[in-house]
Image (cartoon, rainbow, N blue to C red; front, side, top):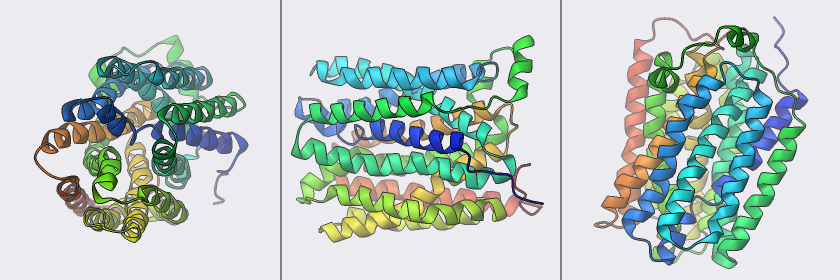
Length: 394
C-alpha cells in the first residue's frame, strides 16, 4: 500500500510558523531567572516565574481542548499567536517582580492556548498511518525552538540587553503570524458534526485523555529533568566561569535535528518503547557531563548527547500520546501532552528553586538526572505489558 503524502505546503508552513512561535517564546525562558535575580528577585520568585506560567497554561488547556471539538482551526491559531505577541511586548514595561508575575500568568494562558491549537492543527494535517514521522517533523519545530532559541536569547541577554531580546522575540512572533495567515488548515468532519450537537464540557474530561495518561506521566518526569537545565544553566555557567553556555543549546539543536528523521521512522515501525529507553539513558549521561562541566568542550558534548536523547524523546512521547486516542479527542490529548510539559518544567522550577537555597546548581543537575532513570524504568514496565506487536495508528 503506497504511503499517504506527508509533505504538503500547509504542513510545511505550519512547521515553520510553529518554529518561530517557539523561538519567540523560548528565547525568554533561560533569561528570565537571571533577569529576575538582577532586579532583586528572591530564589523563590525565580521559581515562581516559571511555575506561575506553567499553572496558567495547564488550567486553560481543558477549555481550548473542548473548543477544538467544535471550532475550525485557523481563527484559533491566529488568536493564540496574537496573544503571545502582545504578552511578549509587555515584559519591559516594569521591573516590579509582582507585576512581572501577573504578566507571566497571562502569558501562560496564551501559551497554553497556542500550543494546544497548533499541535492539534498538525495532527489534522498528518496522515494517521504516518503520525510518528509526521509529528516527529512537527515536533522538530518544538524541540529546535526549545533548544536553539535559548542559545540566541542567552547571547543577546549577556552581550546586549533584555530590551533587545524582547524586540527580536517580537519580530519572530510577527513572522509566525504571517506564516499562520497563509496556511490552509484542515478541520475534521466530526468537528462540524459536533457543532450540531455540542458535547458537554467537563473540566476533568477536557484536561485528561484517560487512554493517554501513561505516556503523559512519562512526559512529566522527562521534562522535570529538562526544567532544571532551562532554569539554571545560565546561572550555572556564571558560577563556573563558562563563556560558551550557548554552545550547549546549539549542539543540542544540531543533534536533535540530525537524529529526528531516523527516530520518527523508527517510531512508526517499532513503537515508542525501545526508543525512549535508549534516549532516556543518553539524557541521563548528558546531565552528568553537564553537572561536571569545567570547559566549553564539556558543554558541547553534553549538548550533543542531550539533543540525541531528550530531543528524540519529546516528539516520540507526543506521538505516543496521540496514538492512544481518537481523531476527535486528539485536541484534548495534545492539550494534556503540552500540560505535561508545563507541569514537569513548572514543578521542577518550584521544587528545585527551594532546594537551590542549600545546594549548588551542579547538584541540581545531578538530582534531576535521576528522573530520566525513572522514565526509563516506567517505559520498560509498559513495554513488558505489551502482548501484541506495535501497529501504527490508521
